[in-house]
Amino acid sequence: MMTNPNGIVTQGQFSFLPALTDAQITAQLKYALKHGWAIGVEYTDDPHPRNTYWEMFGNPMFDLKDAAGILMEINNCRKTFPNHYIRVTAFSSLRGVESPTMSYIVNRPKKEPGFGLVRQEAEGRSMRYTIHSYATDKPEGERY
Amino acid sequence: MSETDPLHAILADDAPVNLEAEFESSNVKEVLDKLDRELIGLKPVKTRIREIAALLLVDRLRKQFALTSATPTLHMNFTGNPGTGKTTVAMRMAEILHRLGYVREGHLVSVTRDDLVGQYIGHTAPKTKEVIKKAMGGVLFIDEAYYLYKPENERDYGAESIEILLQVMENNRDDLVVILAGYKDRMDKFFHSNPGMRSRVAHHIDFPDYSADELLHIAKLMLAAQNYRFSPDAEKAFFNYISIRMTLEHFANARSVRNALDRARLRQANRLFANASKSLSKTDLMTLEAEDILASRVFVEGKLDMDGDEGSDIVAD
Image (cartoon, rainbow over all chains, first blue to last red; front, side):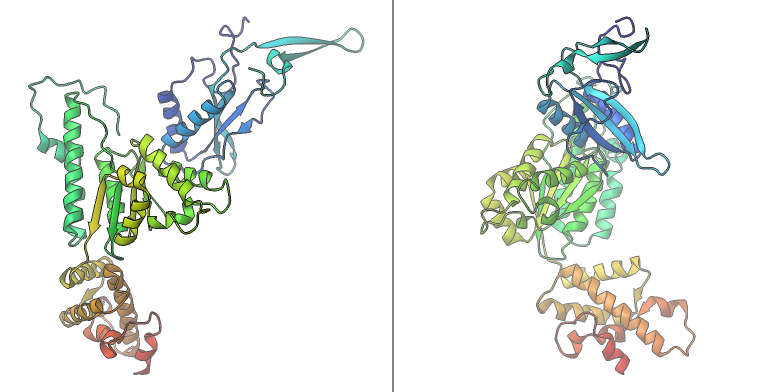
């Protein structure tokens, strides 16, 4: 792909960079904790960009002081789903914000087949285009 | 544990280091002095805290020569009678360990059995893990820890909680210090039935009971913190009160003193009200008189103060 030379899914923060190390993740977690954001760990095996709601791994973590506990949870999730996409989201409960403020991928499948372009004939000679993830041809849980 | 600062290069073998300077720069002295000033008595406790502080400081110096050693386990067990200051010391411990760079945040999460053990199958593990995650980077203080294990009920979920704790105490030594507290005999029984726990807790510290002199000293500190003071007569009366109270049942050291002081404040307020016609000075508002203390049932009937209903006696006369 011309726009994505590494052939990896790019969504959320830092996705054009090399994978974050644990130390870098810890630094990002510290940043979120400093702002008092609640942090959640989520996973999925459907990489479509419009797949917004991923499965939560455990409960979102409120009122933590230190990043070590979250990193422990991330590592647990990696152990359980070594071949899934795993992301960390930070949620701000501040009035007027009340939405995720950070979201970045911390684990991805070893091989990401990417997306194909799907064309659909429509009325007249018009064409409709969409993308389709090759991985989702297989049923859930067997994709990667 | 703080990461080794990349700016600090490894020192040469014969480079001198200054323990004194390291001690000064860590601000530990300030905390230890505060400990001496504000905690009366508790000799064995203070000695052990000094030892731990010394070990961590020496460890820091060793690190400058790249003499690495395993992080010492600092999980602790505080035993002692009620009101001997276990919780207070635990709070201080968090601060001291933070100053020494052993824990990153230095906050104290204080929990009891209810916060760790769930009510149905599958409830305990997430609950315990959540508490542990909250305590990471600080100190997890488990009060009345012996309640975690109830041998008479084999379906009790406490054992599951203990298992998770043990795992974290072993694997996340750098992230978390666990302090258990409870009465001596019950804690001994608890450790006896959980040998894994015993071996993972390196420091067993016993809190001795206070003497009457120490309790009077504590009372004065408590009053000073609330901007009260004893009159000279009241001080004598309170010393007598403590001596008698110590022989009665349900004596809870500093906690009994605090309750007695609270009741004395009630009586003082009542006394001031009774003489409302007289204009009061600042000294009047600050001073507890002997009569505020002598009105206690401990003196009058040689019985325990029953909390709360003493005010009525005073209003009567």
